[in-house]
Length: 205
Image (cartoon, rainbow, N blue to C red):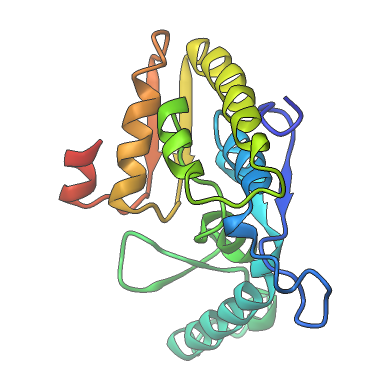
């Protein structure tokens, strides 16, 4: 429940430093990490699940966006109070240009990346995904299945609203979302804002 609670923020370290003893232990293959990550994706607001390991890449991308933005906005009024380096640079995900003063920014890159907030899984979809995960003790697999089902069914059954924004989901992940929605009898609002959904994703959902 600590991971799944809507009021807690989860910071994931999906890759270890190269000189770490854990560098060869792949986060994406570990069964208990899968349970924790998927529990955090059930009903938590999209900004409450962050992949800390993506920080260096996100900062670099923000710097590149800032450089491009300054090239496009090199002219500004002489009495303008702010210096260009003080501007907040974010991405306009609905257009083909960079925007200033809005957008997802560096933190958004950590949330919306490949290891950020994913869609909620139904217990059956979670069990399918768990097949390829590795456990120190094989008996733990069944334990994780039971733990996830108990939390997922209880939380999804009482949700009246689910909100997701600026997340990079594959078509397969929209299939997972559809499976979870079938377990939300009280759901009144599904909010998918600036998600870049394709026709295939819509059909899958």
